[in-house]
Length: 331
Image (tube, rainbow, N blue to C red; front, side, top):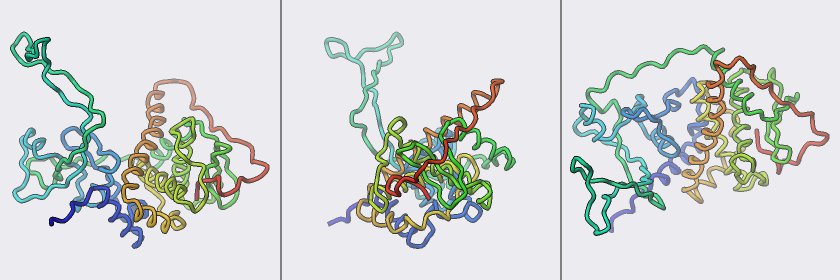
């Protein structure tokens, strides 16, 4: 009997479990030591970034430095040539619709004025998940050299993320102490003072993690976030926020702080071992978190020509009594 083909989410979960045990999962690696891990993989022809599990999969398994990928047919369409013997990587392709020939009342195909068949778009419910084999640009002859990203100063990077945070209008309180968390009951974020962080990157990486939890509120992405510390549901939410924080750090080019994960490693290993499909769901939700938060960055871009000032950060008063840990998500 032939061996069962391993599904992509099973392979990714297996890889992450092994890396978690070694302390080298993507969100645990320092920005300076492994920049290729944070290069967002994208399609060389469409320039569209891969999303969710496909993005994680290409980052985890790719031995290449170039972040560009293309299918065999896409390479051919550009006059490129996939190297003989090159092995592609299978990613998930979700087919949401298909085009069928339009037929008249008698069931005959309808043609246009030039004699070409007319097609109609049919939505597939549920969508069909198939595989698509992609090859890295390093395996394809004829691809132009990868252009270096435009250099952006550290000041510009931090100004960008600061404006994004302000545009969310999230309630953020800074208090001297060693805790950073999001409170679902109060719908606010508590952060240590900025001066307590060794670098601005670490401050913003932590705050982006808490904003990831903030998106789960019922008035936003409406995830299950009222969970007991130590529970599977709590670990699940932390996994989503951590992956989203990694994605955001790469997108905003400020990196990701890997030093905040220790408390959740064992829980993540148990979670992914018991239910490998969890990594597929986590990647999908993390993508939603990133999309939601990056909308506030686009808001900044739309306002560049607007003379109005950025909405100031809203800060709540310090609560009379701290909420119980079961109602907090954070570091």
